[in-house]
Length: 172
Image (tube, rainbow, N blue to C red; front, side, top):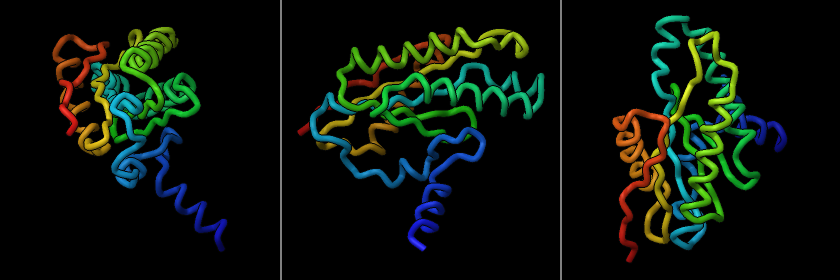
């Protein structure tokens, strides 16, 4: 019975298409994810110009791209990091035990690996933009995700394939 309950819980927190964790897992994280301001970073990512893949090639092709991108992200992050598919072509990456430079390095490595994927069948490389925010002792994960999402909009407006840091919030 316990094994069955654990399997059901895992299924409830997993994205069927990509095999990644889903938004439900993020909604159930503890409010603070390690205590120091630079220990945990949240990156909110969104594929650039992904709509054209679905519009030009159909949703089956879009699903194949999403599954490949998800696999690339999962293989690129460090063992203690976590990636979740929020829905559509949006992903959240929780980066643990690093400073801003370390977080940027992981995200830029994801971007490089994506550029190296053979996506000629969709018209060239698929890129991703990220907004980045620190999780601090008084900033809960949900607020950091919201800050990262706002920074993501700046990255997208700047032309995409970028990492933009959210404004630094003052912790009390």
